[in-house]
Length: 459
Figure 1 (cartoon, rainbow, N blue to C red):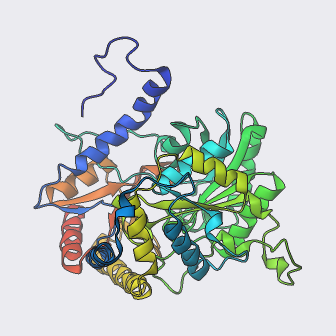
Figure 2 (cartoon, rainbow, N blue to C red):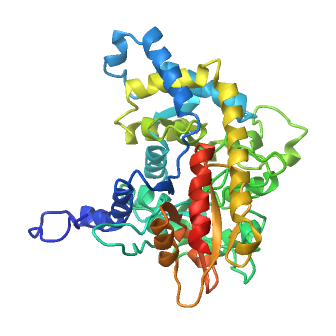
Figure 3 (cartoon, rainbow, N blue to C red):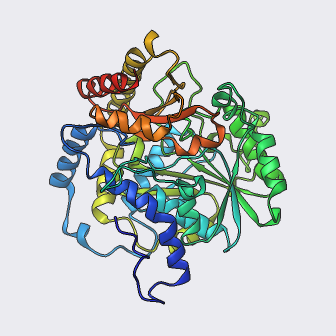
């Protein structure tokens, strides 16, 4: 992809847009490379699930056939969002997120996906030049070393991926990472989701150029990219940290219903840890001290239902002014067809079974990864990290002398399989280590063939 800032007349772009293009252009290169994957290659770097799409097609067709009307094609009424969609979302949160404070449709602002939710919420909470803290590593788009016409590395700094663009492009807000201290062993894989994150947040807060300009803590739970859930007590501690520093707590909970390992820490929504302000709660000792109006939850159909292309999500907040701000900041609302689909999928009699079946398939698929890659001949070459949620696993690769992560990904491609690059983990890795991401949310026969190709490339 040609750099759009090259060979352009002076003044063609505003300073703000020129900066935006500079930030996003490398990511655009990487994403465009996905379209260049040949049919013979197996893509294990998609970051999406294909396990429930056929079922969702049938649910969608039925909804469109039975309940779509001419009103579906009309302009939306005001900024409040599609009412039936909001009612379905409120019921979904009530059923699966176990809120201590009742959730009604009035607490919900629909957005065009979770990315739009993040963008609009940060724009609402922050002024230009403010900052948000984020436990790190945080997620990054699945990146490939496959930009055409030549295979070449794409260097992306951690703060330009994942949450970075959503905070910077419109709100002009900085995202400050809070890393635990890296260790020679792989202990960071568990410590990053432990109480060790609290001193890391304190250190990041105190070392910021102007701590008073930090307005929020942004987390993902279940955690992306670690692909495990935060323990309940740690979620509460982070929320209490926010109360102590008068910060908003933003909880990105898009993977809520994809936890497939029943023996691992289970998903605990921030909504379930709020104290009830209208009554004395004898169990307050296990609730957060945070004021409920400081807590804002993000969700979309992207992960729980593997529907990335639908672009339907929401912000849930108990603060009326925040909801109003998000409504106006996301003025281009959810498509009426996307809203119709979302309501249908959330209220379908098949939803519970669909979610359960998908989790079972995810568990089986991750076991297939371990079966093929955790073998004696690869003991000193690759280590799968513990994964209990989501569509992919992270794998630390022990690099040979003069080898780098680019070589690993190129060798895999030469064997006919595409894997992702875990760029966001770089600050935690030791010399001689690299990290790749391996998507497993796909049919077993395709997954096995792809993993066998990957194994052959590593030998």
